Amino acid sequence: MPRVFNFSPGPATLPEAVLRQAADEMLDWRGSGMSVMEMSHRGKEYMSIHAEAQETLRELLAIPSNYKILFLQGGGIGENAIVPMNLIGRSGRADYVISGDWSKKSAKEAAHFGQVRIAASSEENGRYTRTPAQAEWKLDPQAAYVHMCSNETIGGVEFFWTPDTGPVPLVADMSSNILSRPLDVSRYGLIYAGAQKNIGPSGLTVIIVREDLLGHALPVTPEVFNYKIQAEADSMYNTPPTYAIYIAGLVFKHVKAQGGLEAMEARNRAKAKLLYDTLDASRFYRNPIAPEARSLMNVPFWLQDPQLDEAFLQGAQARGLLQLKGHRSVGGMRASLYNAMSIEGVQALVAYMKDFEARHA
Ligand code: PMP
Image 1 (cartoon, rainbow, N blue to C red):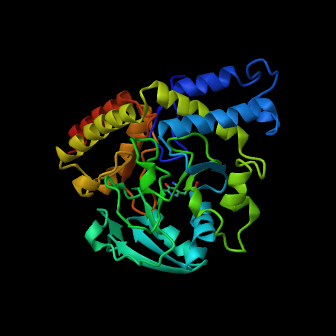
Image 2 (cartoon, rainbow, N blue to C red):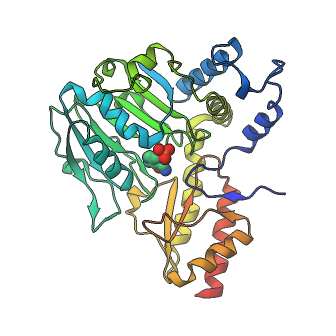
């Protein structure tokens, strides 16, 4: 059976070369006589996999030496609580910037752990079509941190600029755009990302945190989610999600072999342009996001006549174009174009869209 083009927002399509390598190594990882899934996390084989995944990620993102990389569990939603538990203690206050449903959810959870202020929001009638401009950010100099979401997976709104928060550490949920283009890690205090888009299987959360932010956890913080304890234990205070980390390591190497993040950006821009150009050239489809904030990773779009949605999805499925249904909260369609989505996949999608339009317009 041929592989489909999977436009899922996550868990999402992964590089075929990585899946093939994992299949080859499934029963016997490099002469160990074991699957990676079966290895003790304290054994030398797994320890080498763990270390190599960390080193490759550090290289890919040029992560400075005063930042720790943690491989934890709990996902993006877990981090909504884990971030404030670890960071808000310095002043008891934090600023949140709202650019979509995910950042809004983060702010709501954080309020359980301290005083949360909305420093800026681009919400208009429950919808989001842009990022809040820097001039709109009303920052609290006493805030322990400022939180943002660099790419809103549901709304399709992405930051293409790095906010300036002065001495207050910037914290970003990069679940859906990490590794999609080069990133200056030194501009952030903490970055977190659930793995199941550009990194690997769900179950792994990657945290990149500046060392001076460690050690301020609220007493209520579970030890397993205490960044300092996990940093000192090299993310092995508990049993880490070993197989997910192994796959992530293969993905990091694959991205590097493909030319690194500059190459990812060029490919991702070309893919997104193809789709946005198709949307803009049509009266049949629309995407309302401000051009400068249009996500390269998640492209929501709507048919003018929602009664055709079902026929659109069925026709797409018949052509091997899967998981195009939009998030239930906004309806319509959404095509997620993560690193592992090929240009051929996007070409097949726009060809189908034009064909569908010609038959129904
Ligand atoms: N943040 C963002 C930007 C996301 O896209 C998602 C999931 N789609 C989450 C957080 C939540 O991730 P999880 O369900 O793994 O906790």
